[in-house]
Amino acid sequence: MKRSAAKLEYPRNQDVNNAYTIDTISFFKMVRSWGATMVGAGDVREGLAMEFSHLPAAISLAIAHPPLRDSIIRKDSVSAYTNQFPAIDASLEKIQKRIASYLRSMGWKAFVIPPDTDKQDPSFAARLFPLFPHKTGATCSGLGWVGKNGLLITREYGARLSWGTVLTDAPLEVSARPYFKGECNSCNRCVRVCPAGAIKGREWRRDNSGEQLLDIEKCSQQLKRHKTVIGKAICAHCVTACPVGNREDANYFMEGGD
Ligand code: SF4
Ligand code: SF4
Image 1 (cartoon, rainbow, N blue to C red):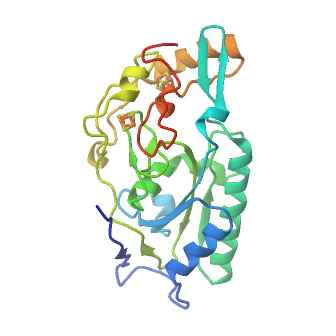
Image 2: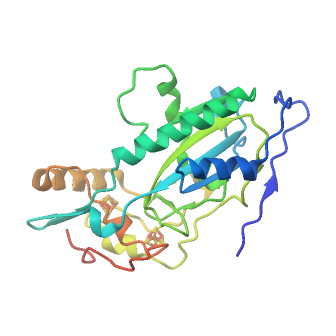
């Protein structure tokens, strides 16, 4: 089903810089030419932290990961998927900076939330990163939903992308109808394949975002176990198992295995 676009309309009294106009389609074409695999805009005012209340739109962008077969690590009884791609994160950050400087040159505000918000960053801005999850930007832009595995799922690439966000007051058009709930439906592959039994099998709903989809402690114990064998705290069986957008159509790990 096509997810139609809609105009992002600010309230009349909103302090938005309307000195310039922006052609959302051309702008996103430019962002894709800079290397983004996916890009969209969403109206994120609902539930926005006070610190960002002057930035009602999110530009959500992502770069796809390399093929699954190139990113599997196996040692002894442990197998894992390397879903950490620092080079892709660095490319995303470069694109985000170009977006921010373009918007600022046109008189709009822009705040960059980088892909990896956990990495050590002593700046004041970094303290604000946890206030806006990439999942909110992507689901409000209609790019993807939050899967039962707690990850952003897109129809084109499943969970195999890295994400970044730029918050702005530029009057962009919302790219597509936002996702308000997950669309995993009867699929439970990630639930079955998780070696820690950490995925609860619940469908995500925006109006119930406080509900835990995962047992974080069980997942983190599994990552620690993997680190002792392969030297890296990675697992991601729940990424490789996802059939959505999986063109390789391969499940690289035995269901229920380690
Ligand atoms: S990373 Fe591994 S342990 Fe954690 S939820 Fe995914 S499959 Fe389960
Ligand atoms: S494997 Fe199935 S249930 Fe899990 S995130 Fe993908 S579509 Fe959803």
